[in-house]
Length: 180
Image 1 (cartoon, rainbow, N blue to C red):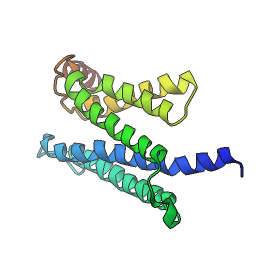
Image 2 (image 1 turned 90 degrees about the vertical axis):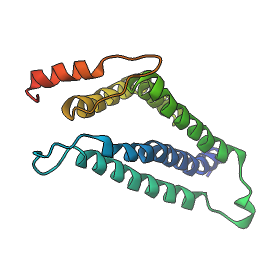
Image 3 (image 1 turned 135 degrees about the vertical axis):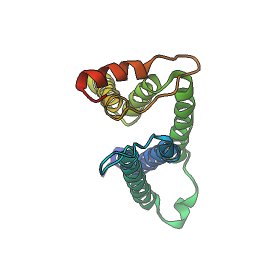
């Protein structure tokens, strides 16, 4: 095993920990907002709050599992307990990016900050191809937008700097699909 492989294997748990912290920073505040989703008393079975709860709690469970695996991978002999700056920089950077992401959603609504965050994450975790760097985040935002804002009819608050009528667009698509 050469020195390049050793450095790569040491940085992966730190990246995993950063990803787990980022996911928790997004999912935990989101879980507090699920109770604001309107519940239709005539909904049969799986209600309007149940699917978001399922996704959020599954994501939190997976994040905690990833964090536990990452912490287990970062452990070492007693001399390794002194924090390595490179191992701490990644999670600290992801923590700062997550904070900015949450702040940016209030400024620009959902689509733009999420698209920018996903581009950043694909580059941060080592993706170099433009197709994956641009197209995958674009598809992910589109699918998420379609599922939550169009199919489930979740209302998106207007942004402070940029605001667009996502509800009007979603309402017209829901009418076209026969969901209204």
